[in-house]
Image (spheres, rainbow, N blue to C red):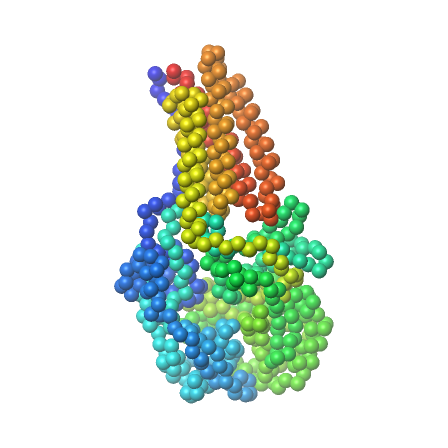
Length: 586
């Protein structure tokens, strides 16, 4: 028996297997609770906590389950309470009252001037804080002491596999956690649990363009983020008739919550006081400057209070009708001096998304009573580091631009399908899928053994099938494709077609051996001609499934195409090379 050398085709298979294992990054013994997301700019994020870290303990209490983490966070949860802030706004003083739990919703500088304000706080940028809960405030230190008295900061120490982070917070840190991931493979909603909603946009003219769909996805993503939903996936879909749909998958949300947030059309309004100046969308806004440094971008960055504040600015063009409304509303307003010494109007231009204020801007005195169609919109981004502040400003700018461009959704949304899968059911799906794959493999091995009565044939078949599955999973991990039930069905289908091709190769080799051919190439050419014909047929059959059921079975089509392509170009040539070597040695 001569020395067995691995053919080039086998080495190619080995290389792809190694790359797939690296992409999958299996960690079967990973335990503990992993951080899934951290709110950007929060105290936890600034302290160094990041997605992917494994939490070991919270304030020296060991964390081994999600329940442990929730119990550890419970002492930091706050009860809702009413909060009053008296501010000087322009030339008048007003009291703003709202409810708070773990944050006051605004930041301020040394002069007690509001620098930024969350939508729930009702304060406006450039307000000057005068009193808190009727207690007078005359400097920053007194204000900080008063806020600490209402919501005292607590020390939170979170130990992770990357070290310990300690920080002060007024409430539970904005961290989402889950069981530690055992690989880079992303599970779909069928396996992870959550809610899937299929939406059909209904336009007045009956036509929805690709640009409309792109803007709709941006607006929906922004709206869901406003309501605190971050663990979601949104993509477009279509059916065989060419009708357009939007598919949204959200983890940890009920049907009722999704229906309430998405089914309504939504609206964007810009108001001065109680008067609406313009609404988002093409009716009132004819142009929004984007991706053009001459009329949009981050203009300046300045340190203040240990943080960096970066200001962005971009230009919008109003329709003549909106310009007239702006002139009429501002014509009776007073001109006052801002903290920076510039002359501005006494009221702010407030932006509302679904009746929630998301930003508030000053109006220059030169715009009083003016029918200007060009307005400069500004805002800011805040972070500890200047680069991070620039990034935050750019993200806030893009978000506001998207709102202004699309405003209220340009069409109604019809909920076509709404499904909820519990995490418990998802675990059962994973378990059952694993069992199905093992049963399928066992069935394949049994049939081949009965057909050929040879263990020598079995092991290369098993190795090839296992290799195909590993490479498919590695590719899915690399492109971050979610594995759902449809994708698992695609893997099983790939195993079936792969075994069919291997039987064709084995039969040709066995015939060649019985006929004592010295040249195996004609036999292999004949086998691979049939394999490529089957491959072409398989791909052609999968293409229509790309949009079947509005894309709900796309995972089956994608994984099947990937799987049979891997088989034809990588694993089956390697199998043929191994089979040739084995039978030539007899």
